Image: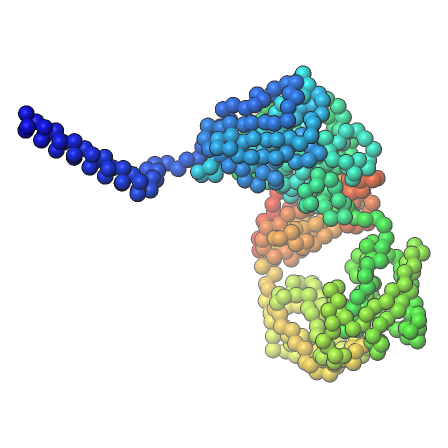
Length: 569
């Protein structure tokens, strides 16, 4: 009996020690998930909601979504879209496996509401998003079921516009989009596709905007913009189920459906305005305007009246929206006073601070000192056959002994005489029959040039070479349009560089010689207003951007090879 009690006491003592040890170990150890095994890539799933999904006649202002695992919200303010938009953003809170949404104010009667979360809802452990999840309910007896899809492309190059906002307005006046929020909004995916779901029947105005300030309105002064030139309406479309594996688009299945194409562009302010004139560098004044000008009258006045009429040499920028004035010489005063009068009788009086330079108006540090003449060539080492050599100087020249120029061809020194290619003597060209596969050096000896600031030149030398004719390819393109009009054809190289351009009236044959080997695209612009360049649209005139199209093939040009193509548009 005594022995039994001793054995029981020993056994009980060991159990107590084991329990204490186990409790101690459990309190000190870090609990970690077992290592190994596949990574969790499954997004959270909605298992219940209050109200139920697609509920009707809902009169509350709170929503609870419950998931099968713990969740988190990421960038919900940027991701969440509510249709129709609310007057104030809803309040979202995460509580364990649930998300609670509190809607401010009162919802509109007989409206279908959809809360589009984008990729904001994610599981707590791995951040797997519940891609493109939408929660829908109605404050009326039915759920609106019409859909509308489309795509937004940049009008000038047909590249997709991702992360833009597509918007639908009721058929109101044209100014509604500048002062009201839309009835429906959605986002474009990276491929430019968008889709509206749960639309009510009716006619709508359709727009898209790169909404930089996230106010769901259009600011044409700073934001790219697109519009449909006629009213649109929803229709019954196949149901699109989000595919979380697709990374290229928020709406991966839309591309397989027919839709509306919107062309995005930056609208130009049609009102002519003077921008701030400024001294760009010593002796050079820029007078910029918002729109191109036919002519500009300039009259010095006040303290500058003594400069007279011929105080500067005038030069226009390429598209005539900026007048460049070259002083001869630069005024000694600290300020310049001018009266400017455009060809449309727009008159401005301006004062230019000559102590400051550049758009930012930094104080000048040149001290009025002169330097040496510099020249910029139009080539970077290779001269193509049949092309003249061109040099542009930093300032117009007042004197130039161009007959003293030299051209070294291989080992032979030739006397050459370049000529000015402009009226203000800033650019010279040298025409020469270049030998193939040869080296050249063009030399302007020291002291033969003087510019309007009195600067002279050190010896200027430019080395370049030519390639064999077999190194070049040739392109012949036969073009024919189905509609009469003027068309601009451009040959595009890498980085959207325009290599050559031609203008064709309805149909014609374009031959491009001496093309460097490489891959090229051909771009067509339907030049409706015959001004020889691409133009964006005008919303107030209901004018879409001029149509752009690319030839279906990418052309590969090889040396000593001719490519012939026919494009019937």
